[in-house]
Structure formats: structure tokens, C-alpha cells
Amino acid sequence: METVRVERRILEEGDAVEISILADEVSDLRIDWGDGNVSHELEAHVYEEQGFHGWVLDATTESGVVHHVDDAVVVERRMVFPNGSLTVEWPEEASLVGSLMPGFIVGLGDDGAKMMALGRVDGETPVAAHQGVQRRDRAGMVSGPADLALSLQNVGDLLVHDAVLTVGEGAGSDERTLLIEGEMMSQDIIDLLVGVGGFDQDGARKLVADVLGYTPDTLPEAIDFGIFAEGYEEP
Image (cartoon, rainbow, N blue to C red; front, side):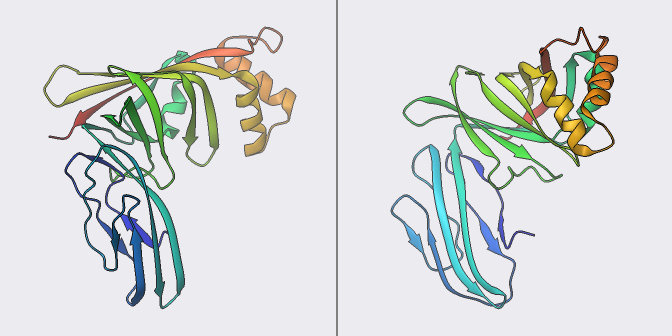
């Protein structure tokens, strides 16, 4: 369990970073916010500029020394696609994977260049996971291609190669959509099944081929993969 709790890691401009330490006794506290400001008490902090800001907390608790390194990402717009909102659009045969996928927080900002912040959400609370935020370049509401590791619950990471993220406005003022398009390598899926246990390479290859409508000999090296989600934008 994390000793340091962060309320949000991707924030709209003007919102504050709020943190707490899960300990009864805290001393020697120092927070370097990474923008020239330092705090010696637990207080909210507002960054003046958009972008990725690395901050470091050091403290002593009754359980020992705490050294916590984290990110705060300030954006213009922040959208939430919670756990359970992601579905596999193609291939349809892989739809069962949807129930294992995390949620995402997506932020759109400008730190001298148009950027998209993508944060993985592991639980019910819409907070990007620690060390689960990445930066992507964007044109409008479309990211450039970059590999994306999908963290599947109780299974492991599955890599989507050259993933492109497209955010859509949706039908209502607070309705937003997210489309992730890329490729998955058949061997990555096979290796994941072998790693989970219960399969050897040949058995895993046959299972993947059967599920996707191929034979072990005709299973392609790369498979087009698309994920869709509906979420909301916070005012």
C-alpha cells in the first residue's frame, strides 16, 4: 500500500495538487514541487504553467523514512473514462479482454507544444495510477502513434503497438469518447498466456488462433486492435 496518497495526478489548470501521508506521526517533511517551490507541511500546491511537473516528498514517519517521487500534470481539459467503460471494438473475438482493462484519464494541454496526458486508472476512484501517466504529442484531439501497455487485471501487460488515441466530443456537453487504434503482436498474446500458466507455446498459439478464427499456421504476426470508451469531461 502506498504511504503517500495523491488526490489527482492529472489536473485542470488552476486546480491544486493535494496529498496526504497515511501515518499518525510525520516529521522532517519536505516537498520539492519541481517549480522552485518547497513546502515543509502538507499543503495544496497550484502550478502556474501547464505541463508535466515532477515532485519529490521526503519525510520520516513512525514506520520509517518515506521517499516518494511523483508527477503532477497540468492540462487545459481533463476527461475521465472509468473502469468498465472500455470495450474491444475489433477484433470482435477479443471482446472478453474488455473486462480486464483499466480505465483512463485523458488530459489535453499545451506546454509549448500541444500534448496529451494519458493516465491509467486501476480502481473506482478517477485518479491516475502512480507512475501510470505518460505524455504524447497531439494534433487537435488525436495523439501521435506510440506503444501503449494495457495493464490487464491479474494477467499482465499487453502491448498495443503504434497506438493512436482519438478523443471525441460525444453527443452531450459532458459526453466524451475515446478510441485507441493500433496493432497487437500474436506472439505477445501467446507469451502472456504462457506466463499466466497452463499453456505451452503450441497450446497458447492454438488457443489464440481458434479464438480469432485462424489456424496455428495462418495466425498473422500482427492483429489490428481497436478499443472504444465513453466517458465525461469535468467542468
